[in-house]
Length: 163
Image 1 (cartoon, helix red, strand yellow):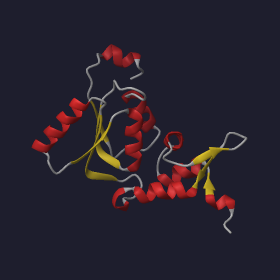
Image 2 (spheres, one colour):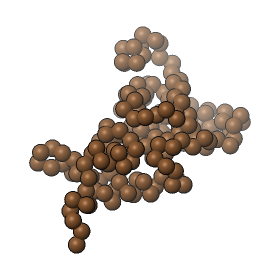
Image 3 (cartoon, rainbow, N blue to C red):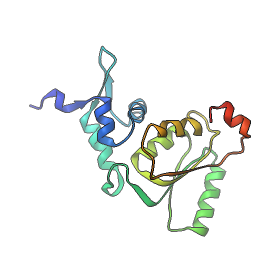
Image 4 (cartoon, rainbow, N blue to C red):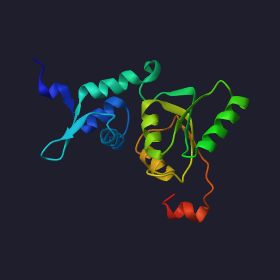
């Protein structure tokens, strides 16, 4: 019979194991990517098996935090803009692998699953917007990812949102 303490881990250990920030682990628990519960003392206990499942799901067994040279993550809520990016990249750089997320939270999850070399990011999105996504990523070492922000917002509007 396995020891219960070996079957679970805290948020900090899960973050270290996955190579992501504690906040990313918290968000993954909230969206169900990681299976967990809170103790009476309000501490999260995360099933080790769910952490191992996330690690196993990473494409090609890439080391935690390593960026794929050919990987581009597009975080954009407008389907027409997603189609535009897909068409442009198909013309100019067909070898690049595009992944799409339609809001900041989904972008954070995709980023955690596989670190992109480049992220194209809209600011004005429902739920977690692009500025919140950048702040969440700032908790994590994202030195291998270049972020390009594409927005129609004026500078004053960006500043009002905390950017």
